[in-house]
Image (cartoon, rainbow, N blue to C red):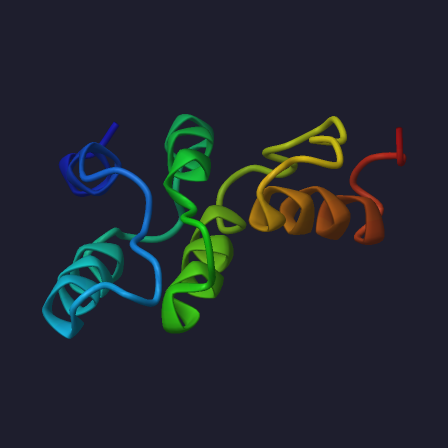
Length: 102
């Protein structure tokens, strides 16, 4: 796994809307430093970085970065209690015809 991805993953999930602007900017800079496309291993690691909300749109950027890697990252339904971004990744893979709905 490349160092840029390791650093992003090591810092954990994205913060929520209550985070400081500096913290959100720092995470955006980390995310933008990750070269595209990501590998399958990197994409699977990045899935753990979704936070409790959309982090002012940063979660959408993370979703698109994950989708630059081999798809699908989530091949089974993450369930009703899953993070909304995990559900989106799964639904997008289903809607894109990459996997059947389970």
